[in-house]
Length: 188
Image (cartoon, rainbow, N blue to C red; front, side, top):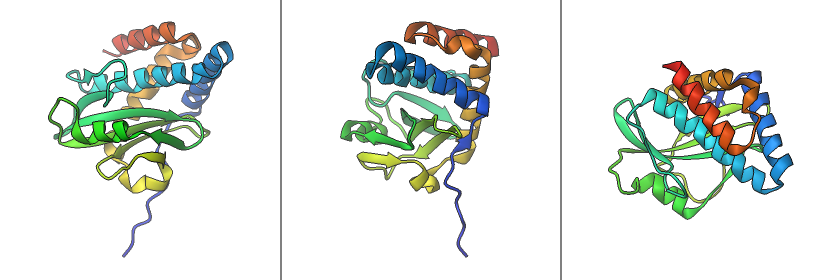
């Protein structure tokens, strides 16, 4: 018997998707192409903050660190790389993949790739990255790697953060990140 796996991530609300697209639009409008990088850092902040709400022991790896963070949801300590996409695909460099699998300086039991997909309808993916290779990666084409329970928990916190930030999130990078921190503090 075969099981059909839907090729969708954990759905985010229409509000969340529209807000994220507007934040990206603001970044690109004010900065041009570098605005995509600024939005990527905002998206990373949103996902890392959501993970930190679920695991207060989360360890961030700031700057150009690979992986982006280490967290524990359930029994496994995970090394996680965070990406966003507006077209269903992300570029994974060899160091992204190596960082997830090796866990950097920390011992990890699992590798995760988090993808915040802001294309309509917006979704969140949290994938087992053990077998992922460098190159262009489509989460939908690898839906069988989705960690559905973990993704649902993280997506629920992402939603709460975005609702807490509301349209004030449509700002430059630093004020947007500060707003995410305030929204997280309000959740506790």
